[in-house]
Image 1 (cartoon, rainbow, N blue to C red):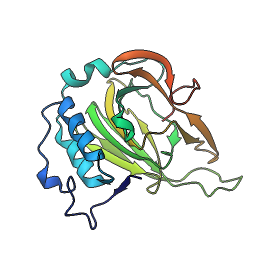
Image 2 (spheres, rainbow, N blue to C red):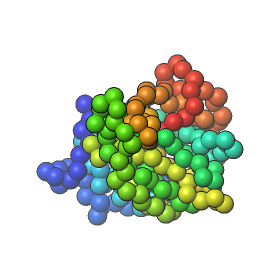
Image 3 (cartoon, rainbow, N blue to C red):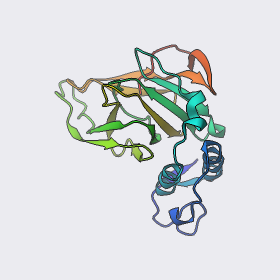
Length: 220
Protein backbone atom coordinates (compact mmCIF):
# COMPACT_ATOMS: atom_id res chain seq x y z
CA UNK A 1 0.00 0.00 0.00
CA UNK A 2 1.45 3.34 -1.01
CA UNK A 3 1.32 6.16 1.50
CA UNK A 4 1.30 9.78 0.39
CA UNK A 5 1.90 12.32 3.12
CA UNK A 6 3.50 15.62 4.02
CA UNK A 7 7.12 15.89 5.11
CA UNK A 8 6.62 15.08 8.79
CA UNK A 9 8.93 12.33 10.01
CA UNK A 10 10.26 11.49 6.56
CA UNK A 11 13.28 13.76 6.26
CA UNK A 12 15.70 10.86 6.02
CA UNK A 13 13.87 9.18 3.17
CA UNK A 14 14.82 9.69 -0.46
CA UNK A 15 12.77 12.02 -2.64
CA UNK A 16 11.44 14.07 0.28
CA UNK A 17 13.64 17.18 0.38
CA UNK A 18 12.69 19.68 -2.37
CA UNK A 19 16.11 21.31 -2.03
CA UNK A 20 17.67 18.22 -3.65
CA UNK A 21 15.57 18.50 -6.82
CA UNK A 22 17.41 18.91 -10.10
CA UNK A 23 14.94 20.58 -12.48
CA UNK A 24 14.00 18.27 -15.37
CA UNK A 25 15.11 19.62 -18.74
CA UNK A 26 12.02 18.31 -20.50
CA UNK A 27 8.80 16.37 -19.96
CA UNK A 28 10.49 13.01 -20.52
CA UNK A 29 12.93 13.73 -17.70
CA UNK A 30 10.06 14.76 -15.45
CA UNK A 31 8.25 11.49 -16.17
CA UNK A 32 11.45 9.54 -15.48
CA UNK A 33 11.82 11.26 -12.10
CA UNK A 34 8.16 10.71 -11.24
CA UNK A 35 8.58 6.99 -11.84
CA UNK A 36 11.49 6.97 -9.38
CA UNK A 37 9.52 8.93 -6.79
CA UNK A 38 6.41 6.76 -7.00
CA UNK A 39 8.43 3.56 -6.97
CA UNK A 40 8.60 4.06 -3.21
CA UNK A 41 5.81 3.10 -0.84
CA UNK A 42 6.05 6.59 0.68
CA UNK A 43 5.53 9.67 -1.47
CA UNK A 44 5.99 13.21 -0.21
CA UNK A 45 3.40 15.75 -1.43
CA UNK A 46 5.71 18.75 -1.14
CA UNK A 47 8.45 17.00 -3.09
CA UNK A 48 6.15 16.02 -5.96
CA UNK A 49 4.66 19.52 -6.06
CA UNK A 50 8.08 21.15 -6.26
CA UNK A 51 9.35 18.60 -8.78
CA UNK A 52 6.46 19.29 -11.14
CA UNK A 53 6.87 23.04 -10.65
CA UNK A 54 10.60 22.85 -11.42
CA UNK A 55 9.91 21.58 -14.95
CA UNK A 56 9.54 24.64 -17.15
CA UNK A 57 6.77 24.07 -19.64
CA UNK A 58 7.84 23.70 -23.26
CA UNK A 59 5.12 23.12 -25.88
CA UNK A 60 7.56 21.01 -27.90
CA UNK A 61 7.39 18.43 -25.10
CA UNK A 62 3.63 18.12 -24.73
CA UNK A 63 2.12 19.40 -27.98
CA UNK A 64 1.57 15.87 -29.31
CA UNK A 65 -0.63 15.09 -26.29
CA UNK A 66 -2.64 18.32 -26.46
CA UNK A 67 -5.76 17.29 -28.37
CA UNK A 68 -8.60 19.80 -28.04
CA UNK A 69 -12.32 19.47 -28.60
CA UNK A 70 -14.57 22.42 -29.35
CA UNK A 71 -17.40 21.34 -27.07
CA UNK A 72 -15.70 19.98 -23.94
CA UNK A 73 -12.33 19.77 -22.28
CA UNK A 74 -10.30 16.62 -22.93
CA UNK A 75 -8.25 14.21 -20.81
CA UNK A 76 -5.23 12.85 -22.68
CA UNK A 77 -3.17 10.08 -21.08
CA UNK A 78 0.58 10.67 -21.21
CA UNK A 79 1.94 7.97 -18.89
CA UNK A 80 0.33 5.16 -16.88
CA UNK A 81 2.93 5.31 -14.10
CA UNK A 82 3.36 1.55 -13.70
CA UNK A 83 0.00 1.43 -11.97
CA UNK A 84 1.09 3.88 -9.27
CA UNK A 85 -0.18 7.03 -11.00
CA UNK A 86 -1.72 8.42 -14.16
CA UNK A 87 -0.17 11.45 -15.81
CA UNK A 88 -2.33 13.27 -18.32
CA UNK A 89 -2.62 16.50 -20.26
CA UNK A 90 -5.97 18.24 -20.01
CA UNK A 91 -6.92 20.67 -22.76
CA UNK A 92 -9.39 23.46 -22.09
CA UNK A 93 -10.94 25.56 -24.80
CA UNK A 94 -12.12 29.05 -23.91
CA UNK A 95 -14.35 29.16 -20.82
CA UNK A 96 -14.51 25.38 -20.49
CA UNK A 97 -14.64 23.89 -17.00
CA UNK A 98 -15.22 20.73 -15.01
CA UNK A 99 -18.07 19.82 -12.72
CA UNK A 100 -17.53 20.00 -8.97
CA UNK A 101 -15.95 16.66 -8.13
CA UNK A 102 -14.00 14.56 -5.68
CA UNK A 103 -10.93 12.41 -6.37
CA UNK A 104 -11.97 8.96 -5.16
CA UNK A 105 -9.46 9.04 -2.27
CA UNK A 106 -6.65 9.75 -4.71
CA UNK A 107 -4.14 12.61 -4.67
CA UNK A 108 -4.25 15.17 -7.46
CA UNK A 109 -1.41 17.42 -8.62
CA UNK A 110 -2.19 19.97 -11.34
CA UNK A 111 0.44 22.02 -13.20
CA UNK A 112 -0.37 24.75 -15.70
CA UNK A 113 1.46 24.16 -18.98
CA UNK A 114 -0.11 27.01 -20.93
CA UNK A 115 -2.58 29.79 -20.24
CA UNK A 116 -4.30 30.05 -16.86
CA UNK A 117 -6.36 27.72 -14.70
CA UNK A 118 -8.85 28.70 -12.02
CA UNK A 119 -9.61 26.36 -9.14
CA UNK A 120 -12.61 26.82 -6.87
CA UNK A 121 -12.65 24.76 -3.67
CA UNK A 122 -15.85 23.55 -2.05
CA UNK A 123 -16.73 22.02 1.28
CA UNK A 124 -18.15 18.51 1.30
CA UNK A 125 -21.97 18.64 1.51
CA UNK A 126 -23.41 17.46 4.84
CA UNK A 127 -25.01 14.41 3.22
CA UNK A 128 -28.67 14.99 3.96
CA UNK A 129 -31.30 14.80 1.24
CA UNK A 130 -31.91 18.55 1.23
CA UNK A 131 -28.40 19.96 1.55
CA UNK A 132 -28.97 23.22 -0.31
CA UNK A 133 -26.34 25.16 -2.20
CA UNK A 134 -22.76 23.99 -1.81
CA UNK A 135 -20.36 26.24 0.10
CA UNK A 136 -17.39 27.66 -1.77
CA UNK A 137 -14.07 27.91 0.09
CA UNK A 138 -12.63 30.37 -2.41
CA UNK A 139 -11.04 30.61 -5.83
CA UNK A 140 -7.41 30.69 -6.89
CA UNK A 141 -5.90 31.52 -10.27
CA UNK A 142 -2.84 29.53 -11.37
CA UNK A 143 -0.39 30.74 -13.98
CA UNK A 144 2.03 28.87 -16.23
CA UNK A 145 4.29 26.44 -14.30
CA UNK A 146 2.41 26.82 -11.01
CA UNK A 147 1.19 23.64 -9.33
CA UNK A 148 -1.93 22.96 -7.26
CA UNK A 149 -2.59 19.97 -5.01
CA UNK A 150 -5.84 18.57 -3.70
CA UNK A 151 -7.11 15.44 -1.98
CA UNK A 152 -10.50 14.52 -0.57
CA UNK A 153 -9.35 15.55 2.90
CA UNK A 154 -8.95 19.12 1.59
CA UNK A 155 -12.35 19.13 -0.09
CA UNK A 156 -13.92 19.19 -3.52
CA UNK A 157 -13.05 21.42 -6.43
CA UNK A 158 -13.99 22.70 -9.84
CA UNK A 159 -11.38 23.63 -12.44
CA UNK A 160 -11.92 25.92 -15.39
CA UNK A 161 -10.21 28.00 -18.02
CA UNK A 162 -11.24 31.54 -17.05
CA UNK A 163 -10.25 33.07 -20.39
CA UNK A 164 -12.79 33.96 -23.06
CA UNK A 165 -10.06 34.29 -25.71
CA UNK A 166 -7.19 31.89 -24.90
CA UNK A 167 -7.00 28.13 -24.46
CA UNK A 168 -5.42 26.46 -21.45
CA UNK A 169 -3.38 23.27 -21.02
CA UNK A 170 -2.75 21.57 -17.68
CA UNK A 171 -0.74 18.55 -16.57
CA UNK A 172 -2.44 16.32 -13.98
CA UNK A 173 -1.06 13.51 -11.87
CA UNK A 174 -3.50 11.23 -10.04
CA UNK A 175 -2.27 8.68 -7.50
CA UNK A 176 -3.50 6.05 -7.27
CA UNK A 177 -5.26 6.01 -10.66
CA UNK A 178 -9.04 5.86 -10.49
CA UNK A 179 -11.77 4.94 -12.93
CA UNK A 180 -14.71 6.72 -11.34
CA UNK A 181 -15.39 9.66 -9.06
CA UNK A 182 -18.33 11.67 -7.79
CA UNK A 183 -19.65 14.88 -9.32
CA UNK A 184 -21.82 17.27 -7.35
CA UNK A 185 -24.74 19.56 -8.14
CA UNK A 186 -23.76 23.00 -6.90
CA UNK A 187 -27.36 23.97 -6.14
CA UNK A 188 -28.32 20.90 -4.10
CA UNK A 189 -25.10 19.12 -3.12
CA UNK A 190 -26.46 15.89 -4.61
CA UNK A 191 -23.73 13.52 -5.82
CA UNK A 192 -23.62 11.03 -8.63
CA UNK A 193 -20.95 8.56 -9.63
CA UNK A 194 -19.33 9.08 -13.02
CA UNK A 195 -16.77 7.01 -14.85
CA UNK A 196 -13.83 8.79 -16.42
CA UNK A 197 -12.53 8.36 -19.95
CA UNK A 198 -9.49 9.34 -22.00
CA UNK A 199 -9.87 11.45 -25.12
CA UNK A 200 -6.52 10.11 -26.27
CA UNK A 201 -3.76 7.83 -25.00
CA UNK A 202 -0.05 8.40 -25.62
CA UNK A 203 -0.76 10.94 -28.33
CA UNK A 204 -3.30 8.86 -30.27
CA UNK A 205 -7.03 9.56 -30.34
CA UNK A 206 -8.88 6.73 -28.60
CA UNK A 207 -12.65 7.30 -28.65
CA UNK A 208 -14.23 6.23 -25.38
CA UNK A 209 -10.98 4.88 -23.96
CA UNK A 210 -11.77 4.18 -20.36
CA UNK A 211 -11.28 2.25 -17.16
CA UNK A 212 -13.45 0.23 -16.76
CA UNK A 213 -15.76 -0.57 -19.69
CA UNK A 214 -18.22 2.27 -19.97
CA UNK A 215 -18.26 5.21 -22.33
CA UNK A 216 -19.24 8.50 -20.72
CA UNK A 217 -18.03 12.09 -21.12
CA UNK A 218 -15.01 13.32 -19.21
CA UNK A 219 -16.18 14.79 -15.94
CA UNK A 220 -13.21 15.53 -13.69
